[in-house]
Image (cartoon, rainbow, N blue to C red; front, side, top):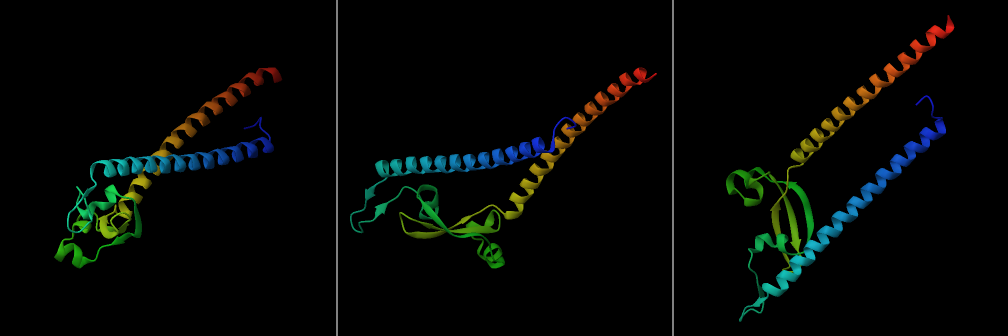
Length: 167
C-alpha cells in the first residue's frame, strides 16, 4: 500500500466493483438460461409423453396432481411468501402451510389454475445468509491478520537493517 498512489488504489477499487457487478449479471443470466432450458425440456417431455385427451371433456389429462402444476408447467407467482393464518396451520392443517408456515399463490399457465405451494420461511433464508456472511468475514479476518503480521515483520526487518547504517 505504501508503494501505490491514490489514483492506482481508486482504479483498483473501481475495477473490483465493476468485476463484481459483471459476475452478478453473468450469474443471473446463467441461472435464467438454465431454468429456461429445464422448463423447455419439461415441456417437450410433457407434450410427447403426457398429452392424453379424455373422451368427454376434451381437456388434457395429466400424470401429476393439479396441486403440483407449478412443478411441471410454466407459472406466474401471484402472491409471494405470504404467512399462513393460525387457523390454516392449526385447524385445517393445510398442506401448503405445514412445512414453513408461509405459502406462494401460483397461477399455472397451461392448466389455468391457481394453486398454493409452500415457500421457505424468510427467517430461515435470512439465517442461512447471515451464517454465510459470518463465515466469509471470519475467513477475511484470518487472511487480513496474516497479511498484516507478514507486512509488519517485513517492515521491522527493514528498520532493523537500516539501524546499523546510521551508526
